[in-house]
Length: 474
Image (tube, rainbow, N blue to C red):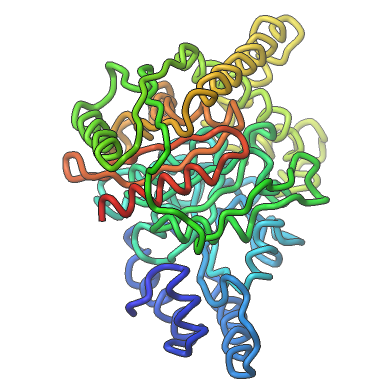
């Protein structure tokens, strides 16, 4: 099939060049061919998807005007609820949890005519940077199946990178969309905090979590965000969007834009080939009319430690509800305390237990002020750092990940090394700003991502930067 992006698919269906069923069957065939090796999907909703696609074809036949994403197949991360289907968040403790309602983002996609094709693998409760902590399976990088795809949205990213879907939803708590997008060579965006409702997203860190999208180009990203963004009565932290950027209005030039290059984003631990590619990309932006300015974000080094205090603390609180009584699998015991211990002990994996323990520790009476309160103070200072810099520049540009995809199992037993993979992305969630990773070349035969960041509410600027860079590098 010659139509590979959401925009192309929707237009081809409207112009009767292809039917929604034909599009769906094309992608179902690719999933059947490729996913046994890659392991991106936990479940494919074949019957539901065919029913949704059939409705779109009926609309075309009756001459009705089509909604914005009519007939576009979309995969959804396993922590985002799809009514009538299991949402396990990659964990054994929720292996039988069937969603009783659609997440707002999913409901918006369905209303826009998108076809929800299945749910994708992820690190357990989104805790991980490689999609290896999933209880169910290990997902592989489609570019090189001996490598990790990144995480925690590795299943969604791998599905797009392998051509199994044109679009997927993911979630980012500390870079869980951008980092795997970088490692797999696709587009991944984390919008401003509150721009996409968190209603129906299984919570990890409530002040950090944000649903976003993975696509193959900037226009598709604009289209998806146009559909899923907006204020929601079910989510008190959702906000009204000041300006909706549609793909038809997306500019693809750098004219009048000033790009800040944070000197702290080029650390000694960064892979030399990655650094070279990112520096070359910045030079291309400059040669194409963008103004480049070196800036400083001096608190960058504190973002990772602050994140790994705040996020485990919020995870400890959020995951307290999973006790085998109301959700998930209940351990068989006639003693209440023993049932709790067995349910949580057997239901949670190693990384989840580690972070619950860290979070409980930093929230405890003797350590709250020393750790959690201090981390919140650092968070405010990091936000002010970004606010100051965005008074001088429109967009920040730098690497998404300090390294290319590493081998399966290489860092699995070294949590600190795994945490460092998110060094350039955790600040985005801490400050609540927007970020997008775009492909900028190959190092050692593996994809490298370039990251654009903009201030809260300025998502249109990074969409424009992404579109312009795409036009420049095609």
